[in-house]
Image 1 (cartoon, one colour):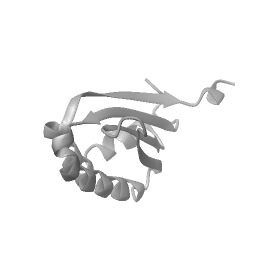
Image 2: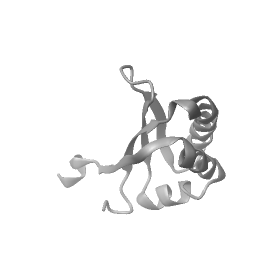
Image 3: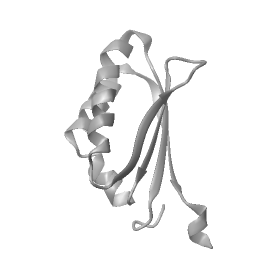
Image 4: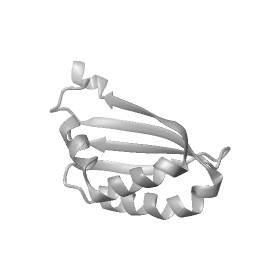
Length: 104
């Protein structure tokens, strides 16, 4: 687990069910917009796979692990999480990354 004082990059990859796509996209967009306004957020975006339009990848950077935990309590994140409960295919793959330049 990364040091709580270090910037943390999160990469979350997941697939949506086609029948839920139209309902979930506005919820995702609202979460992206609101997350970018959080004081501890450094970068927040979501990309869709050009070869698989149901595959999405969130790329985020936060000031710390604690900031991520606070983000996960926000209404916009919780609304997206609720939408994903019905509309996500399988489980997401979430990776938390630390900058290797911090080791030098």
